[in-house]
Amino acid sequence: MKRDNLLVIKLGGASLENEDVIQSLARDIKKLHELGYTMLLIHGGGPAINAALTERNIIWEFVDGQRKTTPEMMKVIEATLFGIVNRRLQSHFAALNIPILGISGSDMGILRCHPLNDDLGLVGQVTQVNKDLLSSLLQLPIIPLVTPVGSDEKGNKFNINADMAAMSLATALKAKNLIYMTDQKGIWDQAKETIKEIDSLGLYQLMETKVVQGGMLVKVKSVLQALRDGVDEVDIIDARSENSLFDLVHSRKSLGTRCYRN
Image 1 (cartoon, one colour):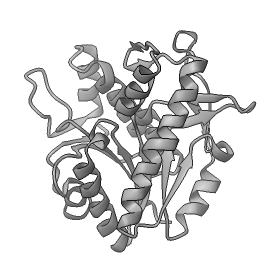
Image 2 (cartoon, rainbow, N blue to C red):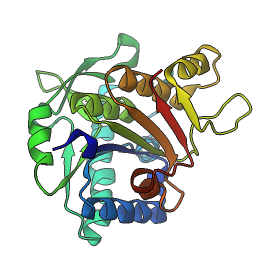
Image 3 (tube, rainbow, N blue to C red):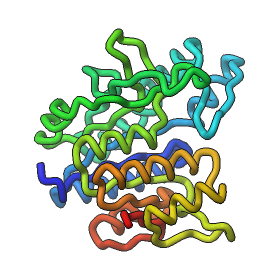
Image 4 (cartoon, rainbow, N blue to C red):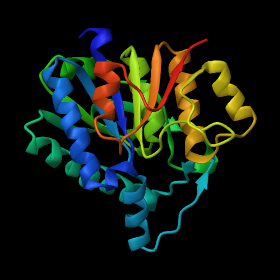
């Protein structure tokens, strides 16, 4: 597996609610796979989790862009992410004969973690990635699709922010590129215009001036960590834009935000 050929791609939860978007992403992934790119996918699923919790009359809250997670919620989150979102994506990819393998981050210590902090409950911070297992899988002609659920050494399950999980996978595998597919055109500046390119210092300034908040704040934090830990480039692009993934990777055309180190 060549570092230059490895793409870690996070599929955003909100964009995955649209069947046409999923099919468009699947077509791009199929083309890239046929061109010889090695890909590791990880997906979110916030809207699906919201719906599942609402159906069960479970109230939730976000703290600094992270969902506070109780043991009751954790069972629903895991069942929704792996049992519904991951399997739905698998079915779309399989329809195009894409060799996809759906796995949970809690399987075989793929995403080993501990509690991020006491206030968030069962929200996990990744402490170790089973990179040997993932590297072995990536040697095969398959594309792993990871659910962002982790576990500790005792087998307790944790809800992991998908952006942070993607960053952890990319840095552990020494990927050159990390791509966030989202339902926004990229990172906005103070005037709500899409930033085309930005370096680490610029990202820090966006956080300090509170231009980025909520879910985008968590994403920017994960981007900064990825750049600090060796990823050369992080791109945030709109999954709803036709061919956006293929154009970015193969043609180097980006309508989103390209992030790089100073």
